[in-house]
Length: 117
Image (tube, rainbow, N blue to C red; front, side, top):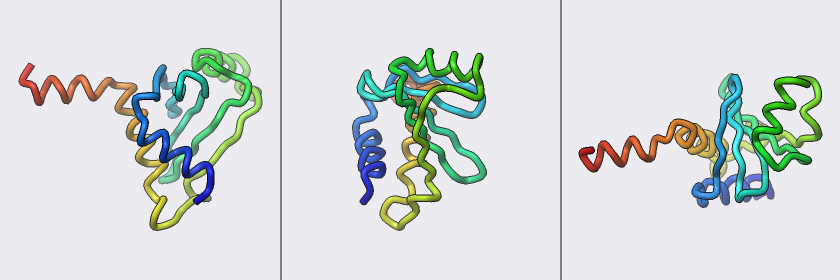
């Protein structure tokens, strides 16, 4: 298994370390482990996960994209279509769902429904 798939698995399995989730257009931005700024988006059935190399705040990345759309700084992009296999096919999709649920605070909503609040 490649290192990026292991990293995606780690993010999925430690979802409490995903914070500062914000959206810009179709991209969901987040910080992992209070250190690493990423975005993930779904496009035509594929997922794109991007790591922003020189940024340590989600707001800074979003501002860079808003005001300098052609130069958000160095980044590394991973596509789910490049990592398809039976074992790892849903890693990117699962991470996307977790980040999207955090954006809308779904855990609290579901806890309130389950608890009858």
